[in-house]
Amino acid sequence: MEKKILTSKPLLKLIYDDISLQLETREKYDKPGLAIILVGSRKDSLTYIKLKQKKCRELGIQCFLFIYPALTAIGKIIKEINTLNQIKSISGIIVQLPLPHNFSQDDEYKILNSVSPEKDIDGFHHSNVGNLTLGNPKMIPCTAEGCLGLLNYHEIPIKGKHCVIVGSSKVVGVPLSLLLLHEGATTTLCNIHTERIKEITNDADILVVCCGVPHLVDQSWIKEGSIIIDVGINHVSNKIVGDVNFDDVIHKVKYITPVPGCIGPLTIAILMKHLVNNV
Image 1 (cartoon, rainbow, N blue to C red):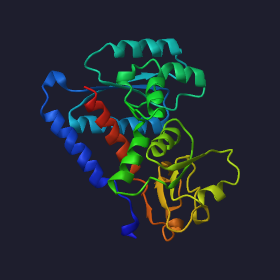
Image 2 (image 1 turned 30 degrees about the horizontal axis):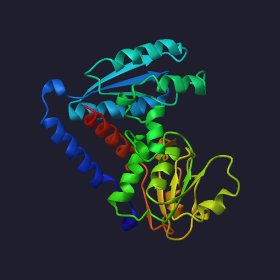
Image 3 (image 1 turned 30 degrees about the vertical axis):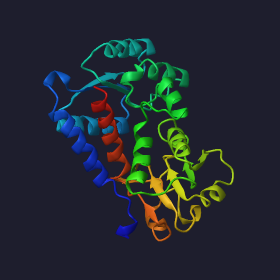
C-alpha cells in the first residue's frame, strides 16, 4: 500500500531548505512579515491560522493577526488593509476565508481586491487571477500550486491526460484547472450541479477532490489505475478525514494522497515560499 501513497514530505523539505537558506542570507531588516486578517471566529479558520503562526515562529518570520467581529463594516476592514499595504515590513497579506455569512460575494471581492497585488500571497486579487488565466502567473493560490507541484515532483505525466476536479472554488478548483490546462491536460471542472458526475470522474486519469464533503468519493467514482489528489480536510468524530474514502479506493488507484499530512502542510509551505520570495 505504501507504494501507492503520494507523500509531500520530500517536497516539503526542499521548499523549507530553500526558505531557510534565503532567510539566513538576509539582514534582520530584510526579513518578511505576514499579516493575517480574520473576520469572525470560525473554529476551522482559527485552526488554520494557528498552523500558519506556528510555521512563522519556526522560521523566524513575524506574523501579525488582526481579528474583527463578524458584523464589522467592510470599510473598516479595507481601511486596515490599505494601511498594511503601505508598511514595508509586511511582505504578505492574507484574508482568512471563508468570511462570515453576512458578507456578500461582492463584499468579499472588494476586501480581497483591496490587498495590493504585490502583497497578495494567496493569489486572489483580480490582476493575479488574470495573469494566471493568461498563462503568465505572478502569484498562484497556494493549494492549487501545491497540487501541481506534487504531481511534478513525483514526475506524474500531465500533458494529454484527462484531469477532473470535483469542486470549483477560487481557492483550489478554478486555479488548478487553469494550471493543469496550461500544462497540456484536458480539464473538466465539476460542481454540485454537475449531472452524471460519476460518468465524468470514471474517465479521469487524475482526479482532484476539493469539495468539502467527507468520504464522498468511493470506488464507484473512479477507474482502475487512476491518480487521486484529496484536498479535503473534514473533522468527523474527532478525526480528520478527506473527501475520498481512502480505504475503499486504495486497491483501485495507482497513487493517492493521504489525509491528513499531505496537501495541508504543502499549502502552508507554498504560502511561506510566496512570503519569503516576495521580499
